[in-house]
Length: 351
Picture 1 (cartoon, rainbow, N blue to C red):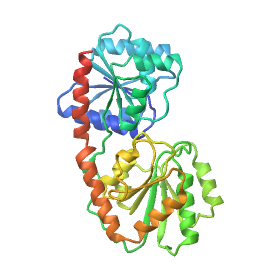
Picture 2 (picture 1 turned 120 degrees about the vertical axis):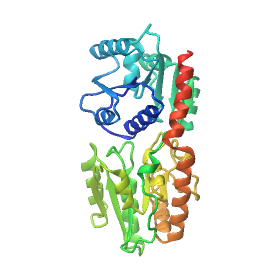
Picture 3 (picture 1 turned 45 degrees about the vertical axis):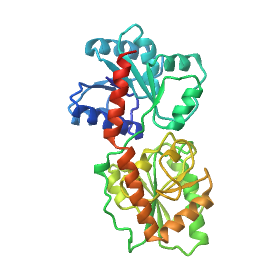
Picture 4 (picture 1 turned 135 degrees about the vertical axis):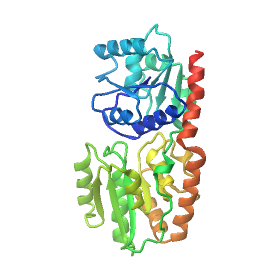
């Protein structure tokens, strides 16, 4: 049984979908609990996986907890996999004394709150899965020694990798992600664009922002304040990332913190060179100067310098793009992720 409480579609929900799809190949019976109308719930139906709508308001949502307990008793899963903190919060008390393996995935590199509720819920899991070594080390250092590493993955075959690195009509530089400035640092991206526009002769570079979220108006305001309206455009939410990335030449990922960075993996799978912040689990993907560039957090000048270097050198873009795709093929495929989870599920049954 998979339990995900997110109502929208972000990197975490894509990972759940890829995992369910891979597990289906091994004829593993699966059931998904997710909020009513959630994109993940709808996509699970495409896989032929049963979906039960369950909305959870908070960790102590009693009606949701009672419904969860009933569904677990009806389905009798060998393993219940909690994919969000809130799912684990409800499950930690609602499933007390029910004999089933309990696995949870920790996707963010934020500190775990020191509240009693948070400590109790993470202690209730048989195995905690971290999506990067950075998160894994943090959790173990915080006392959760039953934490193990399973990297996130990207659907390699869905992304275009036979690309033209010598685009004649200019260079498209893009950043994609949720419009949440606390997490995704679109401000640094915009400042890099403005700096390039004012201080270099690279007038063939266009900057694209893709995504949606609560901070759109703030992002628009930053573009205006930097006088970057002529070179920075907002594409909005992108339904098909593989098609969008086909139109991109350089992917940038400026963040304040990051568990791993699914969009980086998508860019690499597309054969793109990547410029990303040296934060969280990102250095576990990018080998600086080989398959991409790492830049200090909030350093728009360094980010701009790397973008200009890539824009000016077709061979550098091609070499980094090729190395990046090989990185994804060898370490971040759904097959590798699913096999690692299956091993953890087996050991979860022994707890």
